[in-house]
Length: 361
Image (cartoon, rainbow, N blue to C red; front, top):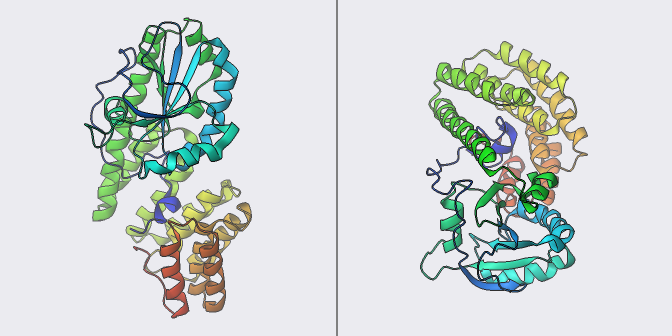
């Protein structure tokens, strides 16, 4: 499956991602924090260990991680606001492809990243001692992830730094945070995530094997576990199931009603249009609806989203507008991040050669 398809099928609050299963967590909320195992302090005074005078945020990140880059200024604001209240923030670099670039990255961030920054110790663990003893042990497989260590040296909170509520941090700093209650809440969330992941894998396998009944059942169960706001994303997947069942009329009806309900949701509109444009045997009516829907997506995104433009180009080509498709795909290539350019360039070459790209690539 081509990489960009993931963005088009946006499945149910990340529940439909095909990520590998995460090992059961052995590090839980309320457990003593593992030791700090730092290879080098890139910025700030070294922290030898946790004391009972401070609260610590240990945030795992990497220079190649887009969400990490977005969350760094926010974390820095937290640090600046609470550093005089015995808060210490450690930006723990992990899973880094090239650690030699970390100091330059920190320097470039300047006053947006003023807290301590450390490199992982890989002397005994190839993946890094901190990555293994904190992230892997806690069952966390995505960054950025922050751990808060309270004055008792215990893990009081785990999560994405952007979701850390200021009131929670204030309570931890004031020793008023109910760690035991939060531990139960966190465990319930993790259990739900495991259910979502299992159903996601079941759905993914069923979609690949074209077992549409199982796929429909798994999707229905997924929709029961996610917020109502994710229903429309589920519809994008259900349209693929209807297409698989050769119920093109049903797919068109669901696509139109879903699109009409959220005309400014660019990613959803793109997912719907792509499902229709790649449906086997799509007729002129289906293609016309796909064009209408992708037009909404392109308008909502301001015409600058490479994934949406790629879908626009496909529909243009299918409508016999070869020159327009080539021009649109070239714009998609120009706007794409580096990692996506090779794929889009291949699709551009296909259009230039008068060929419709394989939707499965």
